Amino acid sequence: MAIKLWDKGTEPDKIIDNFTVGDDRNLDLRLALHDVHGSMAHIRMLESIGLLGKDELPPLLDALSEIESEIKEGNFEIEPGVEDVHSQVELMLTRRLGDLGKKIHSGRSRNDQVLVDLKLFFRDEILKTVDSVVRLFECLQDLSERYKDVLMPGYTHLQVAMPSSFGLWFGAYAETLVDDLWMMSSAYRIVNQNPLGSAAGYGSSFPLDREMTTRLLGFEDLNYNVVAAQMSRGKSERAVAVAIASVAATLGRLAMDVCLYMSPNQGFISFPDEFTTGSSIMPHKKNPDVFEIIRGKCNRLQSVPNELALMMVNLPMGYHRDNQLLKDVIFPTFDELRQCMDVAVMTLKHVRVRKDILDSKLYDYIFTVEDVNRMTLEGMPFREAYRTIGLQVNAGTYKPTRCINHTHLGSIGNLANDRIREKLDRVLAQFK
Image (cartoon, rainbow, N blue to C red; front, side, top):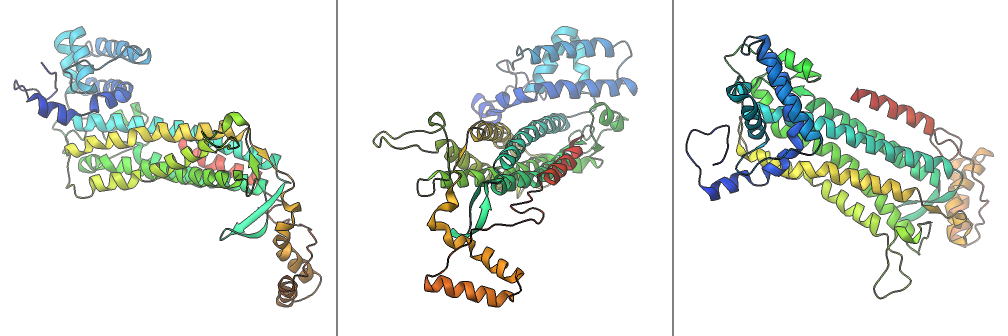
């Protein structure tokens, strides 16, 4: 017989049961530890308001600690016929403690129970993701410093434009990740609010101490209004998805650059053979499959906010079973994004940078702006200098000086990587 917290003696149709549960039991395994922690906080609060006796709390906490250890050791499973992680934990408690195990659900619903689990889960996953972003940031900054004096072409409209450098290129993506972390910080603040005590979305007649559970679970604040707490289901997922998509957009764009710069037509960078793939018919091929897969995965991750929005767009106030499907969409995104970042870091550490790119006559015109600025500094009006160089280009007589002298903050000669690191430190402080 199926074990369900809402069981009232009626066995559901098996096809309907399988359809409504879907893959939820497998996804719930990722919530198990958080479910136990939420229950620990909840029963401490129940004891404080007299719904549990002082002699009842210790055995409950001990039993929950045993389940916590089993989860950490990988020995926890949701048994066949058990609907979800909440049912499994309560079943295990009841087996060990009898009717005492049935008391832990007083004053809460599966609605606020899963909300707590999800918010604790999102909080932890965000922090893990931030760690991966920081590793990618540090890799890019290291490359920026290492190759800060190596020039490369800068483009607008995919046309050769002005001198750039590998220091500037790598450093640009490092700083853009800082902006992405501000998005992640906002998502963290949204999920770091306690919904416990909202029950099914309309509160409880028990005198629950919601501030106590907020402190015990380390939430920054409460979802005070119990209806608003329930409305945070879906909103939390969308906030997290937007932050994930922001990081994915940065990484996907970097991956596109890498694919472009690896092309023999440009040949700015290369990687050892073990980081590329070959062709079944063309012996010479060294394909950037790693970065193509990263690009594809990151593009897919950018679709997740829209997918979640479409799932929630016409739902009225209150809980709806549609919300269960949000887990199918949002849970895999953390692993996929972190895997992309970790593989990118591993590969980029072996990048080979070509150091003589701008020596080619192909890039002569990249120095036109430098020569216009040089003539302006020597006293010629800018428009006259611009016209002079333009006429030389049109006549085919332009000879570049190949002299680069950029000194302002954030330019080729002054990357400001230390300032960018300070920006990173400021955003990381938001996660404390």
